[in-house]
Image (tube, rainbow, N blue to C red; front, side, top):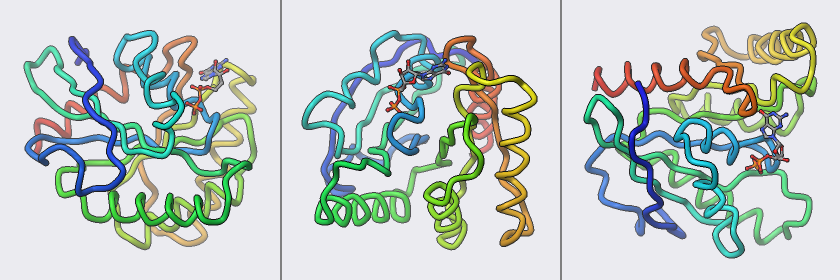
Length: 202
Ligand code: GDP
């Protein structure tokens, strides 16, 4: 599958302001600087699409993009504000948590959440905590290990393995995972084909 059209739609401060849930939706989240904008740009084949969500005032909002794919399906791609910004105040963190929790638990058309993890690092507490939370809430999610071109294949594979093993300590079933590079377009086809499978199923 390929994305033939992608356009920014709206930024919403809460689920109540989001567009009508009348089509499938796929959301992307991760720690700031994980490579989320780069991956969204690679998936949509648009150089600066996700820049909009990173512009001042939009970083704390739920950003919807209208997508059309070459199978003539229309769906939403959502860029969610990330976690782990050192500069956020306690109040900002709380409001982020409230907004994200409400969105991911209540958004009825959300098919799956792609949780991004930087493949250069060994498992980080902040990511494990977030992923374990998703598991507890029973949110369908997939893991995306980003920036694979930045380390050797062996290093990235070892970090992925360690992350999955950390999850295994708590969960019997492991989520599906992808390894990506926005620079080399690694994993792009795989993610799009996974979205297509889900689009066709529901
Ligand atoms: P975001 O804050 O999660 O949206 O992260 P960005 O997409 O803005 O990426 C953060 C930094 O990492 C930027 O300097 C990107 O150019 C770089 N980056 C993102 N993805 C990749 C990747 O796959 N490979 C490499 N080498 N750099 C990447």
